Every structure is written in C-alpha cells, then in structure tokens.
Image (cartoon, rainbow, N blue to C red; front, top):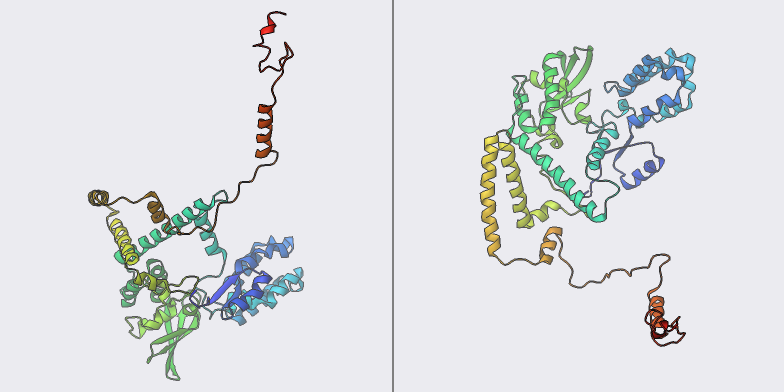
Length: 427
C-alpha cells in the first residue's frame, strides 16, 4: 500500500479484528458496520417489539439519520425508550451494550470522519462477490484459476476504460445555469457529478440564506433547509476560499453539500479551488502513483519500460475507437474492416520473420521465461492401494517361463499340452 494506511476501516464486531487493527493500522479509524449491528435487533428484542412497524421505523431513523448531532441522538433515544417503557428496553442487555459503544457504529458520532460515503461493509462486499462469482468456482484447477483471474482483471480494466472514455467524451446535461455546475462537470466523473448535481439543485431550490455575520475574519452564514426548516451554519474564509458547513458532508463524503453551495453561489464563486474538490471523485483520480505489495511504485516501472507504456497506450486507443463508434453500425463495420486489413498486414509481416519455437510461444503466453537450471523435479509416482508391485510381477512371470508344464494326457513334461499330444489318439 505504499506505506500508507486506510483512513477508515469498517468491519463487523469480530473481537479478533478489533484487537489486530490497532496493531496493523494504528493510524486508521475503526468503526463497526451499522448493517451488522441492526441486523441483530430483531433477535434481541421481544416478539411484540419486533412486530411493531412504528418501532422499527423510529429506531432506523434514529440510527441512520446523518443529520443528527450526538445530543439529538441522545434526546431521540430517551424519547423512544420512554414511549416503549412497558417493554423495558433500557434493561435489555444488548441495548445497553450497544449504547455503551455507540461511538463505534452510530453515524451521529463520527460525522466529521471521512468514510467515502460508506457505512455498511455489505454494500461493496456483495458487489465484489457478484463479480468474482462470474469467473470462479470451487472446482477450478490451479491453471484455470490463474487464467480466469487474468480474465477477471481484464474485464475490470475494460470496464474502467469504458467509464474513462464516457467521462472524456460525454458531457452530462446541466440543470442549472450556474458556472459551478459547469466547472464540476469538467472535474468530476459522471457518477460523482450526478451526486453533486443533486446537491446543487437542492442549493438552488431548497435552501435559503437567513443571517450573515463576521467571526474571527470569517463570513458566517445561516442557511435554512426549506424541507425540514433546519438551520445549518456555514463558515467561509475569503482569504483561503475554504468553506465549512455544520452538516459536514464534505468531511464525510468528499462532495460539497447543498448548504455550502448555496453560500458559494450567493457570494459569487464561479470556480472551485483545490480544497473544494476531492481528487478521489475526479476524472484524474487514478492518474497517481500506484504501489505493489512490496511498496514499489508501479508507475515508475511502466515509465522505465517503453514496451509496457506503448502497449498500454495501444490498448487505450483501441478501446477509445470502439467507444467512439459503438453507437453506429456503419462506423463499427468500417472500423472492423480497417482492423482486418491491418491485421492481415501484420500477419504477413510476422510470417516473413523467423518462426518462434513452441517453448518461446508458451513463454510469451505465460509472461515468464523458463529457468535454465531446473532444481525442482517431478515427484515420484506412488502406486495405488491394492496394486501389485512391479518387482513381484516380473518375478512371477520369470518363474512361469522357467518351469515347464506337464501334459495331462501322457503325463510327460515334454513341452506340449493335451491338445497337441501325440498319444491322445492312442487312447
């Protein structure tokens, strides 16, 4: 991981993982998966409580509501326990245990921690499992596993190239005349831009500035969210252009919230500065240094190897051409014909050269050259249970060839049998 540690890690309530994480990743923030905790709720309460739809709706809103501050969570929880005091939820052992570690799993207590929009381990795990199951099963041999793994990686790279091509060539429609939206469309990927677009539309139609004052050289705005009449405080520094909102969406997800966008639009900001945009969600988010498991910068090895760099650029151009013409059958046919012509030219050029041996073809396919000295030999073949040993079989065959057979007709050992015996007609 290049000597870097994850900013935040979400796991289930495995005690072994909880002990190991501070040792392996001492700088990472460890939280519990909300979904795993809430999944146990119905098993920990009585039948009457878990059958109450109103209770389930209220407790889900209490836990999953990201707008709540810690004191609001405490207040709403007290009201919930009072409304269901006949069920004695405050005496429930599981309820008390989860409440004592609420900072580990309730989103209201880590609203300022960057989570990348992730609160559940299953949301990405299920996606990865679905992808992996399309390529692997438990009946694969080692060679098939390696080849299918390569196919899975090629499928992911191909999908990434398609997304990058769409980000480059496709301009999403704008829903507001604001320059901020136009600038965001040039920075964010399509998926991130649609999330941003929802925020900027809400900033235009669902937010309103209330009050404004100065505090320690910063502009302090009160923004009213018209849907629930909640007031959020937005602080703007005119010297550094830094904006901070009490909603804390940017710290939690990495995209400016509707309240901050409402303030930026009101003060006439038309372009985002570097601190307003998280590189993770931009089109150039992957254009950074990449490390392998040995902390070696892979990007350096690609630059130092001209063949790998040119090969990557060639694949990029092929994918780009396909994405450009995939909407037109005529253009696809024209591209296919040109590729066939060029392919035939390359084939003729290759046939004119000295042909490689089968070993060289296999080495090119595997991507690894066979060692000159082979130190690992094939294991000895073991005989199966119940089979005869080869030495015993040879001894018996030799013994049979040495001992002559006796004729049943004449009773002599003369090298013949009853069918060929000369005395059989005399009897």
